[in-house]
Image (cartoon, rainbow, N blue to C red; front, side, top):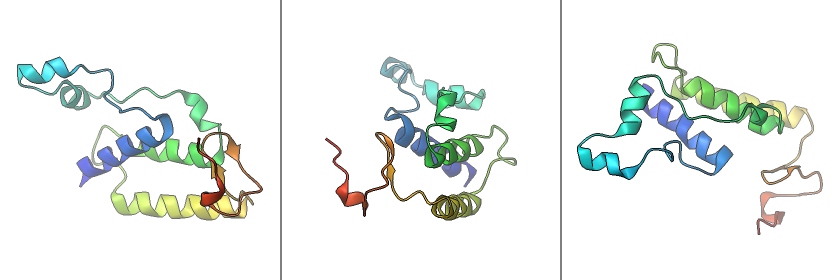
Length: 122
């Protein structure tokens, strides 16, 4: 279960950055019989992400915070999947209370959008 939560943190990383958490590890290592990303994680590695994500928008800052909690090195200190779900529910509620309507991941808050389908992603 805790490994799955770590992987959930990796998914959040992909959502925030658009790149795989292990993009800097070469495929050539796999031919040697081991996965360098797995070895690095066991040694405490977490992918690098710029701290500016903490301040880009409320939603991104909450995803950043959750990602960090999913990546706790000690599995006993790592958030579990039910806590992660509750964290997301609370963040959504707080976002609604703040009056932020929709998140445009490519440019902040879009106050005029009625739904996600109105965004032009091209």
